[in-house]
Structure formats: C-alpha cells, structure tokens
Length: 202
Ligand code: GRF
Image 1 (cartoon, rainbow, N blue to C red):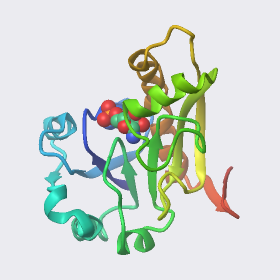
Image 2: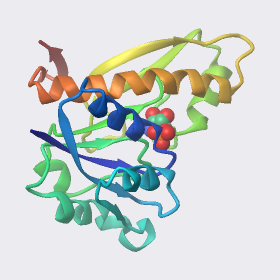
Image 3: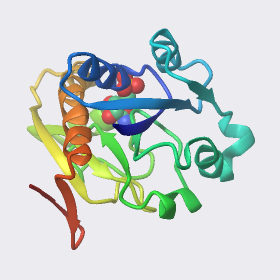
C-alpha cells in the first residue's frame, strides 16, 4: 500500500479531500501521519476523528530544524509527503532524503502569484488586484525554492469581475480538492516522472 504523511497548518479541507477520496475508494493509499505546525489547526481534529496518528510540532521551538523533526517522525514510514495547506518552509536533510517525494498544493497557476509571502488569502487578493481573468491551482514537487519545483497538475478557475478574494478562494479551493488527490494517485501509480525539470504524466 502506498503510504503518505500529510503536513498541515490550518483548516485541513485538502486533508479532508484526501481522506474522502480514500474512503470512496478513488485513492488507494494510507495516511500514516498528520503533522501540524499549529496546535489549533482544525486539520488535526479532522485527522484524530479518523484515528490517524497526529503530531503537533511548535514552529517557534523548531523553526530552523522543523524538517529534521518531521524526518524523525516519518523516515522509513512513508512513500510521499504531502503539504496540504502547510505554511512553514521545509529545509535541510528532508529535501534530499525525500527528493521528488514531497508535493505541495498552491492556490494559483504557478509561476504566477507564488513565492515568498504569497499564501492564503494574499494570493487571491493579488490575483484580483492584477486584473487577470484566469487563476487556478497547482500541485508541484517541492525543492529548496519556494513554490519552485516541477509542476505536476494545474486546474484553471475563472476570475469574475465582482469576485471578492474570499469568493475566489472558495472556488479555487473546490478545484484543489479534486486536484490534490488526483496528483497523489498519479504518483502512487508511478505515472508522474520528472524529466529536465518538467513532469511527464504517463
Ligand atoms: C489552500 O488554499 C492551499 O492551496 C494553501 O493553503 C490553503 C489550505 O486550505 N496552500 P486547507 O487548510 O486545506 O483548508
């Protein structure tokens, strides 16, 4: 069975989408651990409710070696690390040990509206301010560059003139909930291969 760890910071609706996909039989994998950098994250509650082992790591105590702490928990136990609304930056050994085995979901069409400081509602505020007509979401591999790894899947979402950032966020999030389980499925089936910095889906 393909095994994953999910890293979270907040509401955990993407984690829920993964749990739902597994329960519906759409995704054949098991969540071995949910790790949060925020003890108040609703995501932790969602995981506990399903009997998934949860770990809360205080990001202030571990800031520089947060990745090492995560590695301690999951090394040898999982095939893939999924960042699902996880707002800390992973650094250090974990990136090389899990090279091309960490993915992240970002609520825009990378390489637009991403990078340092671009997370949460700020992304959608920037999208509206720029006046673009299409936004969306992306799942990508994680490397040392923020939102910089090879893109795996993207899905477009139309920006309506009267959208508030919150309304847009809601519509993008709905697409994220389909995209993230789909990406995990492709990887678990060995169908997403990085070639020269791009991902070929076979
Ligand atoms: C999502 O928009 C995700 O793309 C971003 O953070 C948000 C988390 O939402 N990285 P949730 O915690 O999964 O509900």
